[in-house]
Image (cartoon, rainbow, N blue to C red; front, side, top):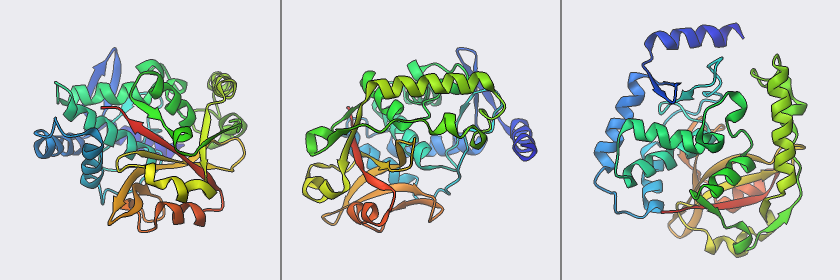
Length: 285
């Protein structure tokens, strides 16, 4: 805990702050320079299809180091902008938010922050740790509800499954904002109940990927379902057809950076003992 606090206080001394509805936005000068470089490179591609922009954005971030838990530095929930270091989720979120920024009428840093907030938080509002969409199935539900994406899994060979979530409430010691905060634990347990009551778990089983992969497009979001008890998904990336073969781009914890995965999507799933299948999300233009 001390190392987290020390790092965060060092970060604060170097980090500008802005405010959206009274909420701090934390980022470094390096992050703003990466954003400016991105806008300069892709700002004239507003009319491109969103899936094309997503792939271009993903490739723009190739080589960025994989770093876990970059959103956990603040004791008070803030919008953390980190384009220098990415985990699998923040990689996908940033690819979407950056592409949306290009497609918008307002390709500014403040609009990018607004778009990222809308995607990352329930109802687009930062209201403490539990307002962040921690479970991917909750993230999918909320962002489909607001029209950002469509879960097309059942349309291309998927099925509805029951797989209750409970991992966070059952492992509070693994989360710095849960282990010493009874109120957060209570809220997380209620969120888990709401997710389970919806029963919106749409999965293409691992055994069905090959016959249905032709319906997956470059730029679709690929979410990897897991057999881990109480957890819905364990990984996320962006589908990418390369030389007629389906791969994906992701922030790889194994390779420690953003890469085009050398394994095919099918092979990656087959080699994972815990992967039970995938969900496919299509971003709306």
